[in-house]
Amino acid sequence: MIELYHWEPVSHSARTLICLHEIGVEYQGHYVDLLEFEHFGADFLALNRLAQVPVLRTNGVCLTESALISEYLAESFRSAALAPFDALGWYRTQTWSKWIDYNLSSSLGTLGTRKYLVAVLANRDRDDLEKAIAAIPVAERRSGWELAAKNTYGEDLVTNSRRKVELVVQRMEQRLAENQWLVGDAYSIADINTFAMIHSLADIVPDLVNTRISPHTMAWRSRIAERPAVREALALGRRFPTGRICAPGPEHSRWG
Image (cartoon, rainbow, N blue to C red; front, side, top):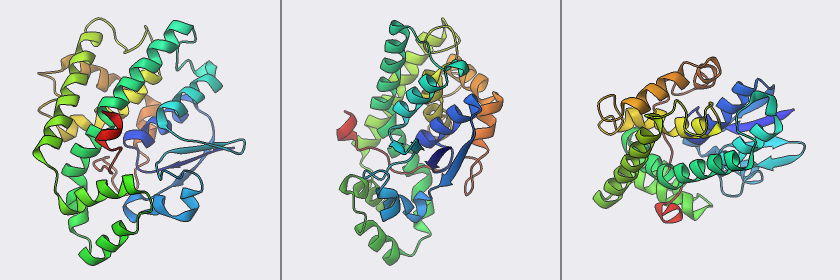
């Protein structure tokens, strides 16, 4: 039995949830509540010492990094046709997903937490929140939560995050003006990995992702959102059914 440790169906957790539902494989889901800092508990750190969701456990092995999990699932369930299996197709798929992660993982973490998480944390008891953040055992994760708790996002950080979103949207527009999908001629994990980010960003920064500036991207987003498997995965939200929540992601220094 495949087990998936995940949060709300946003960002990286959404990637793996969508893949599993597209494949149609049975899995056991374990909801990890990031707002209660469950990913920093000893049990979860035993699965992933970096305290990141999702984690896919199969055959006694824990797999981390959502883009790599997507590749593993596509390779393991080839009948689902979620990736091109020729060498050049794999290269292009991996290149696209890597470029998306470099530019959008940290940007979504900054812009999304600034818009959604700040307000959620503002309703917490300040002393309890500060103690919980101070106790986070992974230093890289601690700084992101401190920014959200104090709402101290610098102008340069926000500007750089928006710049990266614009770069991605411009490249997507060029690609989608010529093709329905991002890699090759078929829907693939490249689309899934990107959709999980863009789907949220269209709500977080609507001035950068909209039908006027990025009509091809928005049409692509609608095509994917209408897929039955995607609707099923996005409906799995527990605390935020609309998906309007975000948690701190990788540091910008990690991704460039």
